[in-house]
Image 1 (cartoon, one colour):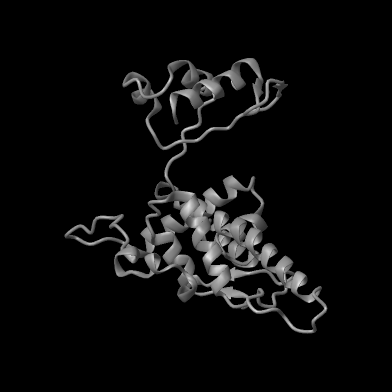
Image 2 (cartoon, rainbow, N blue to C red):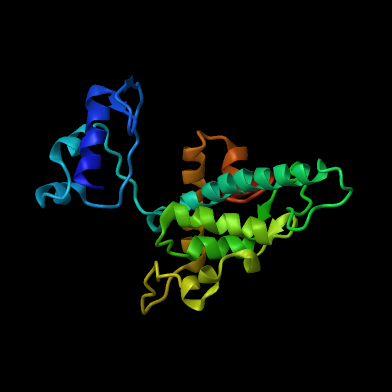
Length: 234
């Protein structure tokens, strides 16, 4: 961002006014600004690359958000959000095609899709989404789901082949070793049960104890989640 643009933004934030290009009339504004960056603005201020007064004006309520690779539990929820977003767009395009009155869909029109049934993601595709490291964070995930919806061809489920090529490369499926394997071995059943218990508890915490919503986060039926809870509580 140029120094001139930084100065203009600072004026909007500080004085709540600006002028359009080529206009001498001052326009008053009453807005809230949410700004995001992956740059270290404090270092940029120290290096003289970013205005300190603008930094402190923006940095009123800072929120540090971990990269997506460090919060994999958010991926199913984000995937569902983007599915809802893009399948609604597909449905709107399909209705627009029907409204042309030609009796057939125009070339390039979206495939038939019934939004009442909703799009889902196969377990294989979800596993790949969960194992990928997402260097582009949430925006890359959004683009991946948009592409998958477009490539689904009107099917009710997104499959592994619908995902972008980057996610299908062998290196993308590599999952770092999370647990050491000691020479004396380990109790696999107890380890898996502990992971399962932890994920179920985190899903319940996130949904305020709502078992139906927690089950959707884990891509389980509600009855399956209830049975797992009973088993894990024994």
